[in-house]
Length: 94
Image (cartoon, rainbow, N blue to C red; front, top):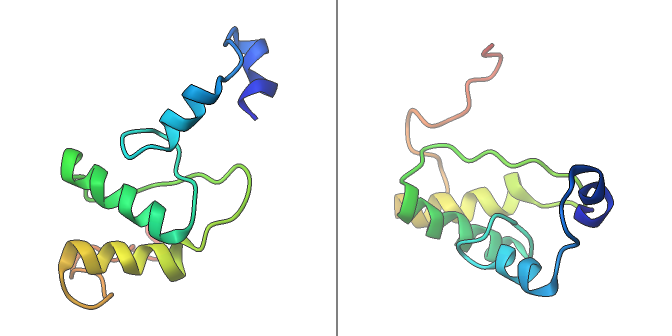
């Protein structure tokens, strides 16, 4: 994907090293099995302390709501897989 849109934006082709770095815990790409993605979110939460996580899928699928989110909640809350009160998404919110 990056090699397709990169040239029109003046970016060099992605190297294997850059790709692998993006997959690491400190990288920007969230790819892999649900456990790997959950570990990365929890790791980055330790750095940034963020309260929300937004992801955009451009290719592939991820079982975020059914597998990743419960793992992250369990790790961060330390109890079950239910969200911390007040962190549930506001359905119908503007």
